[in-house]
Length: 124
Image 1 (cartoon, rainbow, N blue to C red):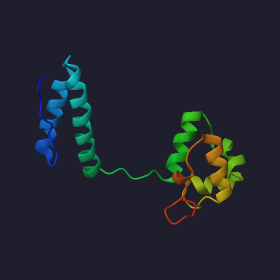
Image 2 (image 1 turned 45 degrees about the vertical axis):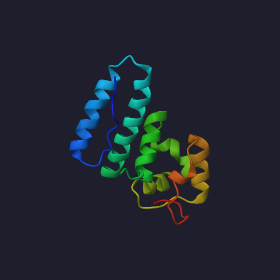
Image 3 (image 1 turned 30 degrees about the horizontal axis):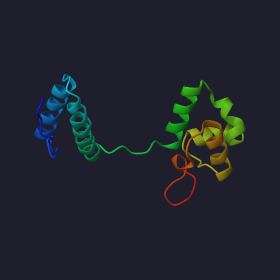
């Protein structure tokens, strides 16, 4: 299938590009695979500009990690230093110390920058 790529700059372009992706997905031509990937990247770029994703807050991230690892708040006590500290962090009342960041990074294998704000302080 011969297909031109669509630069996505507005909703009409987006709809047209999505229709092109649908057509390319149904093609057996190997060249269409490259077109599909390129068009998907153009759509993704537009969607990221239109709907930017904010980094999750520390409580949201910890809730997600607890869910994924089958943990409870009590399981965070060794990492955060006490039940009241866990409660404060999970409510967003208290930020993380660098020791907590290191422990969380090591325990969950996540980058520290998810837990540290842009100014170098641990995220609240």
